[in-house]
Length: 271
Length: 286
Image (tube, rainbow over all chains, first blue to last red):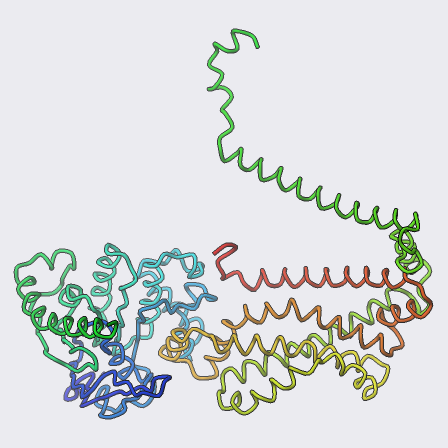
């Protein structure tokens, strides 16, 4: 458990500059300040391609910031830590492993004995409703089922920090709502801090305690909104509440502007 | 047809063959037609060859004929070849090819994965490997006979150099093209670099590697045969060389037939192994 004084995640003036193949530096995020408290669910929304995902790779330790600091539980991030779980946008299940073996992968990589890894994996497979599918290979599952495998494989490591990069964007609308509810249920038992990147404002309000709006790229934090909708929430019903619509309108005023800027830039690039 | 048969509700008693059933039957029939046509084609070609040769339209001395080739094979089987029993020759060639193949494959996979994973090494060695690859490696066979003598070692060496490169390039490519998401995911889940290589890179490269295994076993046989042809004490390649030396065209063809059978059996075994290893892959069309 992290110390009470330090937030779970803290970014201080973090910037990330990538070198493009043509040699021109590309700034993905600049001067990023963001704090996520322990057990807090933070959604990050912003226009497409603005650098939201980069924020996650910085927190995960997969990439280092060019400038500034990234702290997890008060400690600067050095490489991939063992507190972090990451659910990717694309399918990242290992196609040559069975469902059970996929979920066992995390504990096995971390040196947990096989029998224990297996029982923990079975437990999580049960929680995501895939207990009957443990011998299948990923290609034999539907997109939603593969996402459940990815969730189980992430949660089985007991992450204190959960990073999610548009995890449900490839799913159809109904599966998506269902998965969002399941995610909330799974998360509520763990006390993990979540950073959930999405371009879907509705999804972010329905899930999060705090919505962070990013500017058009190079991204930085534009505004932070607290979401005071009571928990537990059901994604399908919460979005019909008057308060939800009020919040939506409020945030969209801020986000819409950035989306417009991005769109105009895109048009200028094409022209 | 009798009138009562028409009036009776026969459709209930005898269900009309549904479409799926009909399709299955059509598919079976097609399979039979294909197989029969294949056999007929083979028979036609052999008969044409035999006929032309007997009619002296083509020179039977140079081109031989199927019946003579068959005679030659059965003589080798029953009375043995001039070099000893036929089984021994086949075994010798197969042994050289297999050993060369295994060494070449292991070396190719290890080097390919290592260079695919370690960019520094790849940058240094890349140009040299390209140069080595551009040498027509079959010309190394005579050098290997000089270096390693007439025994199996020189044939194994020529099989190795032929096998190494295709396997190496495929393993290298396979290691390079591993899905970045999978690697990132494995690292997040807690995998060390070594585990990433062993449990992510190698499994994803296997389909690339297997593609090259099919081709490369053929190369291993070529390496062994050419090596034997240039200088050996035993083996099918030597059989070819001797048949050629005595102007025995049937002997050359017979050795070719035997080689083809050996290669086909090996190919079959490889395909079988592949289907066992790739159970995780979506089958067939997709």
